[in-house]
Length: 176
Image (cartoon, rainbow, N blue to C red; front, top):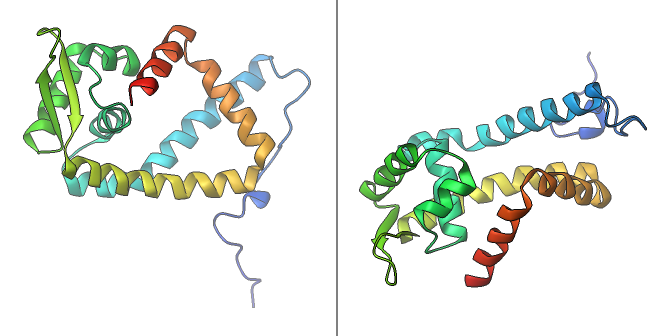
């Protein structure tokens, strides 16, 4: 009889090397971080892919809906800066979400050229379900890593966001 299999989320069994080398700025160490970040993001988002398909949307739609939910009234221009995609691509995604009843696009009250975005109740319901599933996966990973590792992870991720964009995000938070 074979021994029982450990649970799939037993992070202690899957860790090959927890501590970074003192030479953590070397190419191999930096590349390991890039590889893990991309693999982690891919596997995290796989958790919601089925629900995205059921809703008739993709990851780009989810990303936009999440940002608009977090910062109601954000403009298309601000989203272009945040997401780093073209106006054409973002407009297509916004149009899809509006047609499906997940989001509204309105003309700005002070600047008629500004397109302001808001999530509808149906969009809020969808984003809440999706984010709850993602939060459960992140909580498991956080529990396996510990508080100090989570703080370090946040510091690294924050360091990837340009300072000017972090400042704008802080302004958007104030308007919430």
